[in-house]
Image 1 (cartoon, rainbow over the protein chains, first blue to last red):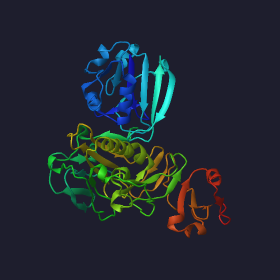
Image 2: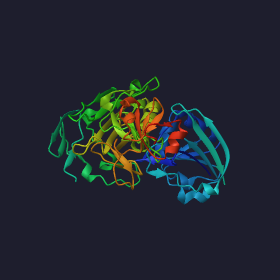
Image 3: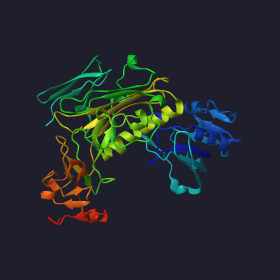
Image 4: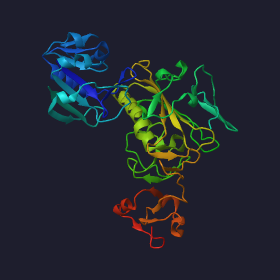
Length: 135
Length: 291
């Protein structure tokens, strides 16, 4: 499965059970790259996509267990360490800012290779970096 | 030498600051069963901030509003900032780049550099309500002396989080920053930051944190803001600083040099560290004291 995740400069992803940041440009980008595949996410994350036209989204709080090899999983506050062996690809959106965090991205990137990287302007972020890591 | 320091940091507006002997009490217009005491804050240990009251801010429901506003408490009798409160919305946010705030000298202020500090300067003029949130810039009621660490590792991440949320949702966030001064110290020990998003009842933003006004590697005398490198026994004042710089003439002096004593406040900076760094920055040693 492909994990999609956003992080700050310290690899933080969550603070006090809430996302650190959001950007509608990232949401649209996620819809774009997952078109034609299943995009799993939690009921919490589904609110971000409420205004998007995407019938490939499945909201399920146990989505990491249910996702299949070709599926995408949008991870926000979930601990992926128990499912790391299933991860074949990571799409990492870097906010290029610092936020408070009490949860960091728990993936060993030594097991992955950076294959693609690009920057784009967000709606509230000057520059967001999108990285693709493959096992 | 800790004496009771209680901050009933809860409601609408701070109306009085009473300093009696060693006790500092902030009185508020209304009372709340919940209060903040720095005695309950753990000593600094790597993390720039620590959660307070299980991350639940002390705002009461009647304080919530979706009308943007900002309110800055009066300086106390020692010239120190009190609480700043705002309802942050896009209508409050700046539309222009920030201008210089160098004209404001908050309590405990020293312009001093250390090699070991990111950006060299130990102290920044820290906005209580960050400029990116309110557009408030040179307001002396909104600026405290804060370490680089407090500014960039403690306060900025929370400001960033709130700014992004407001920009992306067009919602509002109740936001209050209270500097915590112990006894008659001119330098704050830290700041309490509370925030909660209004339209979604805290679903987007909800935190209550204390950020430490410390700088790793530097010892600070909170009474007056003087400082020295860890491991050096004496504190640094104008009498025993490493060098005194004249930022206008680009000369540097020994602290007891007569020329150094004549430098105007706006051109004077202290520097602790290797003189080679000053030379590399284009500074020239004074011919009189030959530092």
